[in-house]
Length: 81
Image (cartoon, rainbow, N blue to C red):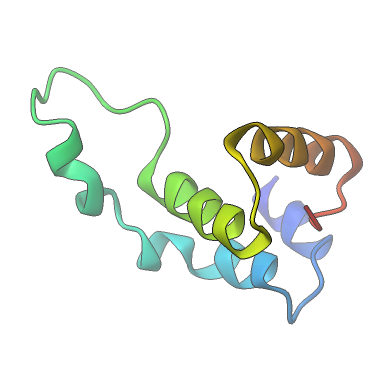
């Protein structure tokens, strides 16, 4: 599924860059201190949280606008926010 999504992104876009490098840019260890109990894993992996925060900031979106853009992009496969 991830390989299919990468094919839908413009190669030189920030979306493609984050899709390819998010695991290295935002390793799970980066957010370990946010979940010190060790009783379970956070529901959203660090690479996803980091990528969303970068895109939200670049596009100047509110939290609600970010959620709506994500839903739209997933539904249409646009990857453009």
